[in-house]
Length: 110
Image 1 (cartoon, rainbow, N blue to C red):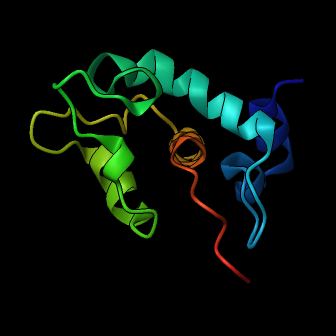
Image 2 (cartoon, one colour):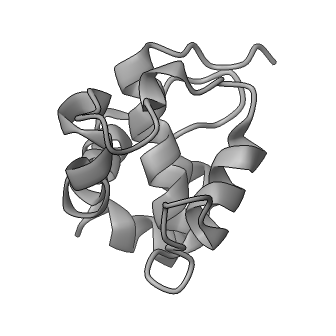
């Protein structure tokens, strides 16, 4: 069963995001987020967040501002389209997990 299906079946947001308080993201959650990123974000934000000059450089996104990230992805911002009708909240959480893993963000202390 895929990580996505396990998370939905369990109904656990922590599973979907790959992060419980104070814990590092699971490799499965990072990989699930990478797949969503590749299919939805790479063309503007670049491979492994290395932008090709079109989209915002996600390597500079602050780890403390997940709310802004979710709002921007869901509703769009500037030239970025809204993805809220395409991506489920759990998928946006997985994107956040992937971006955090690429950027080397550490889990928040408990």
